[in-house]
Image (cartoon, rainbow, N blue to C red; front, top):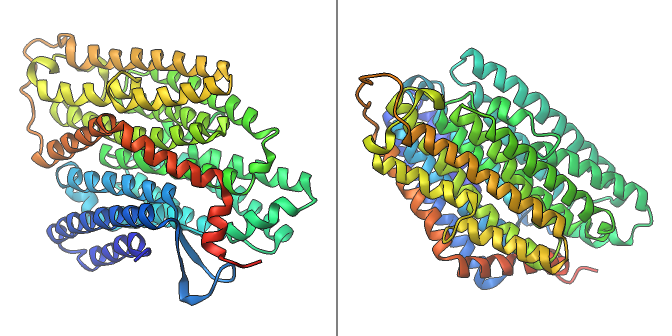
Length: 493
């Protein structure tokens, strides 16, 4: 049953290929598949919470000799929140994806992308983690280019070149690590690496992983491919990317630097905190300078990645817990904001903030749907962003890391500024054109997906206590690699 989050999207991708000539059948299959995947992900989360870390040796080959799927609380949480985003995107796609791209294979690619994402969360060895990253890369590259419009092709080229470089560095690090340890199973590596005397080589491999996953996570100074490519495809695809792809890169950073390279704590926390500060700052400054709705939100993806790096760089159980909760918060809030941007485009025909206005009076419901995740992203109470940033700030104060705390608080103010700019330009000011054209109709599917995801984002703030407790349990497993080793290898010497 651990394999269900993998088998379901893969199976529905194949079914959608078989239903290639029937877009209506593909739409129905997508809704059913996304709903089943969500149920399977939450079922697995309940099992892991009740029973501890679970693993599945494929073909009954025991670890470390065979392929192993492993689910701890961190990966189970990520599977659950990704399934929620996948379900919301499936709903949104019913009205937000044009028929031409549906005929070109949007729905099979949608499920292949989810297969890669879920595979990365469940991978119990580094080579299969690499394989699932490549599945994601192939599906996401085609999704960006789908439709063949010139801006999409340009964005896709920028996207794939940098990500292929990241894949090359990732595979190089995997090869070097196998040469040192003779294994790629994560639990076996966690047991062997501390006993190695090749400290310099281990440090080099750790830096290679940092650069490879840093490119995929869009951290400073490796982020420029993201705002250059994420705004080019339809907003349905951009929303899916914003919620999932960079977060898989951050998940990989958390996984390898808590499980494999925690002993390199002498240099790692400082380096990660410096990168976190620059990632936050450059991302939010880039967002503040934008007048295109999607590009502005794309720069905010970069900025929020800095907070996730801050949780890893502080490296305490409290900071890791705050980072995990922050990841849940930002996945939900950012996806909801892109959904709102798509409805604005559908309503007004533009993403240019200068061409928009007066939507508060004409679409008050849409204004509220923007305001809730926007204020959450800025960190205002009682929304989830406030509790996520508060937990990070408290963890920083506990470790006397006042500099990164100050940067984080300053970036929150700039985030509020950029969200206020969007509010003023899109919803509050009067439109320049006299007698603006009447509002265009918006599909009920798009409204339902946006409303549902905004409600889940608000619920993540109202339920901050239980979710932070769950995140603390996941962080406790990350902070104690012996739990992972024992669950996968058992009593192996």
